[in-house]
Length: 93
Image (cartoon, rainbow, N blue to C red):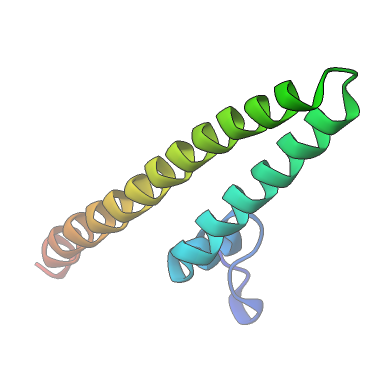
C-alpha cells in the first residue's frame, strides 16, 4: 500500500503512525472517550450524583479498553517482527 514517492497512504499511514506512537494513540483514544462520555452524561436530565457515577463507570471502562488496545498493539508489533524475518529468508533462497 505505497504510492511510490509519496509513501504509505490511507490505512497504512494510520497504522504506521499508531505503530510509531503507541502511547500517544492510546492516550488520545482514552481522552476522547472520557470527554465524550462526560459530555453525554452532562447532557442528560438526571441528578448530579448519577452523572458523576456514570461518568466514573465509563472512565473505568475506557481505561480498561485503552490498556487492552495498548497490549494488542504491542502484541501485533511483536507478531509482525517475528513473522517478517522468516519470509525474507525464504524469499532470498
